[in-house]
Image (cartoon, rainbow, N blue to C red; front, top):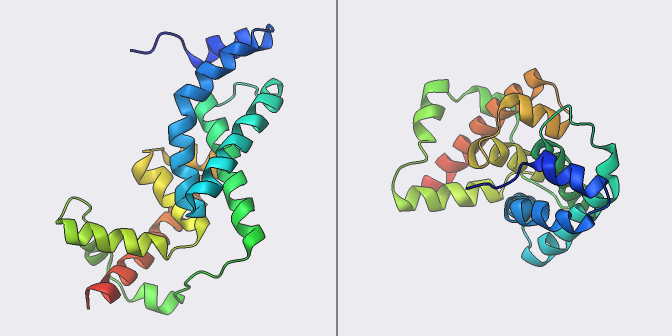
Length: 184
């Protein structure tokens, strides 16, 4: 049971009770770490970046206006921090051209990405997720794993809601293509 709200802790921190920040960090550290590790694909880097995120959040807490949920604001910082770290490494990611993606029927994609199937299919899906770019992987994880709404993802990623929907649609098709390649 949650004893106090994020707003309560934020007000206490702003009033000078900085020890209240530990409560916010405890509440969100695992989910922030989980998002970051999936984007950067390195546990040690993710641990360091998670610490960086909470340091940024602490320093910028006065700039939090409350026009969205604190968790959304926090995820935005985590998302941007993780993507910036990956961009610095300049890794290459698999690309699939539009004509290939357009060959997949929407119903085939929906049926082929049934996440509640056999363990072997879940392993294949994990391998396919690892081949996505960090930005693509982050969007999929925010939507499916973190169960964020399109509106929240738009706020976190600084994309429009339409752009988020379009990207999720294309990423699902890309995942399906990767999934089919691995099955064959």
